[in-house]
Length: 404
Image (cartoon, rainbow, N blue to C red; front, side):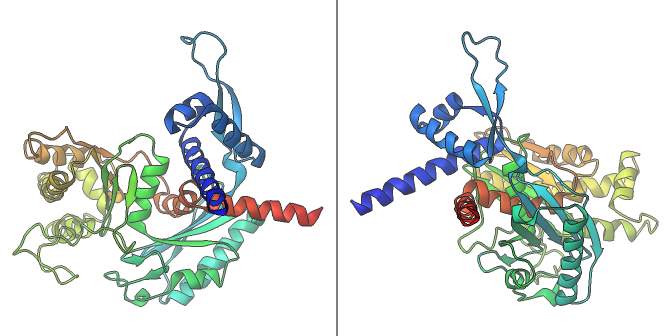
């Protein structure tokens, strides 16, 4: 009997998590929830009643469906103010801190700090900035459900350890989760930045709506994420997939990782800027480069097309192996990104297997404060798709009982 009760509780927990994950993505009626989850109307009523009583879900009126006769169903929406998330984005050149609601919307402006020489000094600066941000905005610290921290990879997300990212030597082997937990009284989740980008895209960006897609974060390096059958794939050891250091030229440039001809050595912003500045030293940054390409500067057009060709090489290989629905481009490379997309599509067209479905290649619909949004998203994912909601509701109920 005890085993049966445990199984029943586990099933109820899983069903509630499934319902919450759907409501977290979009406004939906109870009827639609029943159809999508294949749960009974009675089960949906029980689950949504609990979510409403806990305040994480709200009713937002009747759906506008003039074609449907009879009584209109009531919509259920996420109550974004139910909890607050602290997000920290660690980059090689700077750090960013911001506060988000559980819908991924910003509560505060993002603070940006210049990078420090040592991890300890960096974390001291981040801690001071985060505490200042909380105080200045009158944030209710009891409503903070977690701290999400992202950093260049590879990162062991399970243990919260930065492993050995290229050009990030001071942080090699750094136990980031432990260090953050010693400074903040919140649950701490650490993730590789590119993996966090794919969580963000999968969870918050309803523009894409793809079940199987890859994400390329084009910055000074090239981050990569993968969603298969609607689930983020992070590899067997939760250290993330890697495409930047796969070879696109077997006899090519020596990469900082020690491999020859890596994609990152040809198609990252650092690589393209190196190539353009050998000839045009006045092209100061990526935006300047792209602006010149839009003005049909011949060399900039040539190098952008060359970058697109290398990216297309990797995209074609991926698609032939995995049969993707889409590839999403994000990061600095998405600035005025339609021109790069146009070149990538030109190189991809006609080179994928003929029996494949058309491959969508698009920019992310999320373009502002990407790093901090992604950091916050790894906490929001814990809320919708893991066990964080159950943990928090139990804690809040216990606190209420203590106050009575």
